[in-house]
Length: 75
Image (cartoon, rainbow, N blue to C red; front, side, top):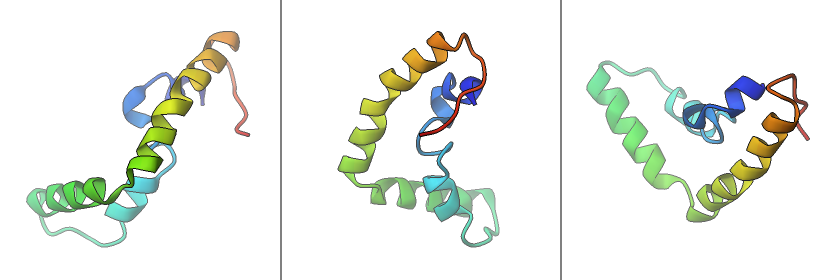
């Protein structure tokens, strides 16, 4: 998990699966349809959720550093 937390693109929205679950809720007929759904679902995320995700990131990075990239347990 530490390696996941060290990659910003997979932290929060993708790691927790919020955006991924919404986007994968239905099949897409093309890449363009997938892109359209991604944009729609991204725009639907609340500012409060995004702020909480951003605010949590430094704490999680410190935990990765303390564990020296080792195994981490979720709270």
